[in-house]
Image (cartoon, rainbow, N blue to C red):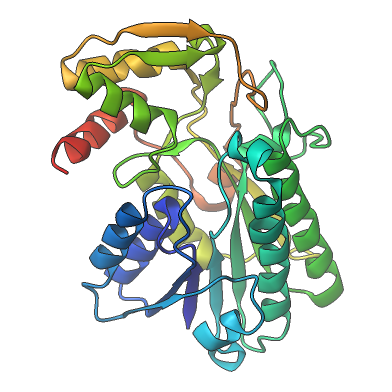
Length: 318
């Protein structure tokens, strides 16, 4: 049995769909919370429901018994743990949502994995946010990650440390993936590329925090979901069996460049409002993905203009 937590989420949906297309039997688990449009989450689940090899269970991973009911330990072979409370800025407003979903939820998954006798691999989501606010780059997995700029970042680093501990104590094979600003069709409405596109299409101004000079290593969803599929079959062999990989494009773009890509894809000109950075914002994210390339051939293929054009095409059809 292969369990995907966060299956109604952006990355979880794409990962589950790719695995289903390859013939895997997938159980999806998600609380379908109202952090953003529940209708979008239900629509993603509707796409997954087209597959006969998919089964969905709605539930909160932090609730006792939910994981066992969804994916009994004796049958479980792989966990792709992508459920989390996302959003850097929202973590300032709703900190306890992050403690529950990210910390308690991750611990519940680890405990479930510990008692799964046939588990081969636990793959879980981390974030580029663990690197903190830096101006130098690229970021490497061996860099110190002890100065988070947000509570969200702190919870994701805590998850990495818990996984490292469980790998040492119980030998659970685990791989943590530090995602760098993943974007694309079926994406999250709270992310800048999504909200900017909608506003530009409606002729509304867009607010560019940090005067549009903040840089992000935008990484297209298909490059990420392909990497997840590959990683599943390659659990770490070292002791302790825990590995961390950056999944990023290794080519940061400024927010101004993002807006330019959206303008090109939509054929519209954006009205810009420049504003100072928001609490929790970092100056730049910049992945060194050489470790992932060496380990399993990770080679992102999609640049920002091509990726945004695909997203705009999807968005204008919905």
